Each structure stands twice: as structure tokens, then as C-alpha cells.
Image (cartoon, rainbow, N blue to C red; front, side, top):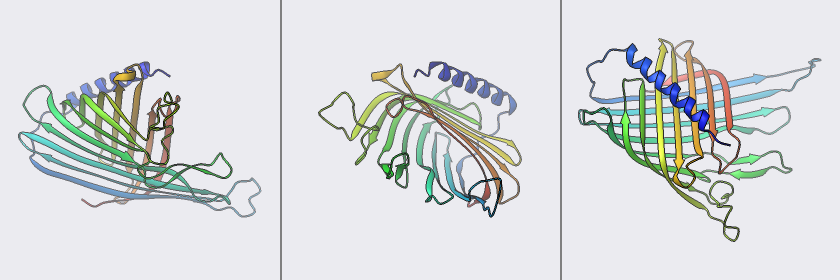
Amino acid sequence: MKLKPIVLVLFLSIFMETYVFAQEKPEEEPKYGWQKEMVGGINLTQTSLSNWTQGGENSFAWQLNFSFRFINNQEKYSWTNSGKFTYGSTKIGGQEFRKSLDEIKLESVLTFNLGMFVDPFMAFTAETQLAPGYNYETDPKTQVSSFMDPGYFRESIGVGYQPNEIVKSRLGIALKQTITSDYPVPYADNPDTVDKIEKTKNELGAESVTDINWKVTKNSLFTSKLELFYAFQAFDETDVNWDNIFTIMISKYINININFKLFYDRDISKKRQLYQAIAFGFTYSFL
């Protein structure tokens, strides 16, 4: 599966959004020091049926979300640290609880402000999951992943561009590591080496990351992160991780959360993976 048309459309969309946002807000005086934000929330869904002739099954689902963002803006540099933790579980009828979502992601970006059109940066990203993952299409179920199995790490350097407070974009050279233990296939193993199973994989390539943090209205926020990775050994294939979240605050503690995510990595699956969820629940800002 080649993603060049999709990548082109994504880049054009980001360019147009960047241009529009840059025109919307006039330049403001820079604010130096730490900006801190920590938000946590839980979403619950429950259905109970008794003698319901139209059919259906009892169900219960919950999802826990936690995110933080610490930014230290100074005259000569900007240091951004962010993290995301999401975990959810669902029970339908007589089935056991099954994991519906599980993600741990940390990112740290140090940008040097040189007063140029673009500024150099260094970045580190880590991703994994919290609980074991299972394939329920087999009988009995088969475990296919666990904490740090796989684990993904990326270190990158390059140049970044920030036209305003809403949009940040960076492009650079990146080293990506995939670490496994009990489940090297299909995450880290090289299928071409039939006499050996690799538990780690290193890839050198180019990385592009664009972040959008747009307060659409007083009570709604749209965040988007588009990550593209081009391994030099397979430059015609693009790893895509595009995460979009639209949050609407009904009141101080109640929100609606719409999440759409597109993921593609040919080493894991030749088909793109999609995730979509609409959740209603409680949220609390710690900072």
C-alpha cells in the first residue's frame, strides 16, 4: 500500500491551515517562563436490558484519559514536554472485559530560538502500552503484546517552524528503535532472515511532525498531531501516525470527546489502521 497521495493531501491541508491561522491572529509579545497544563477524565457508557423483545445485550464501557503539557519558553530556547495516557475497556453480554484502547506516549522537544525563519531542534519520543493485548479471534484467546513489547523510541534533530501559537511543525533526521521481548513478530523481526528472529529493530530516516492546538471556541478545543517517518531503506513507504481529538466542554467538569486516529506501518500490517471514538464523561484540570 503506497501512501503518497494521502501524504500529499495531508501536507496540503496542513499548509492551508498554517496559512489561515497565521492570518487570523496578530503577533503578540512573547511570554517567558513555564506554561503548565494537566487534564484527566473518565468516560462511562452503560446499557442494561431486561425482557427487551427487540433484542440486544447488556454492555458497559469505560475510558480513562490523562494528558499533560509543560512548556518553558525563554528568549533563546523553548522546551516542550508532553504526554498522553489513554486506557479503556468494554464488556458486552457475558463476555469478559476486553481492552478497547491502550496508549502511553511521551515527547520532549528542545528548540533553539535563533530569530530565523526556521529554528534548530532536538526531540525524543517514546511510545508503548500499559496492559497485555489479545487476539480474540482464536480459541482460546492469544496474547500478542504487553507493556514495552513492543516499545517505540525516536530521537531526531532538524529544523522547526512555528508561525503562531496554534501550529508547530518540524522536519529532521530521526533514528527509530523498536524493542520487543516475547512478541518480536511482526513488530521487530525481519522476515527476510528465516534462520533468526530479531527482537530489536533500528531504522534511520526522515521525520516530519506537525502539531495543531486550536481553541475553536471558548468551550471547544481541537488538537491534531501528524507524524510521518520515512525509513531510508524503504523511502517509498511512509509510516503514518495521525491523531485528532476534538473536545467540547458542556460544563466545567463534563465534556464530549471525539477521537479519530489513522495509523499505518507496513512492517506491522499492509493495511491502514483506523480508530474512532465518541465519549461523554467527566474531566478535571489539575493545572
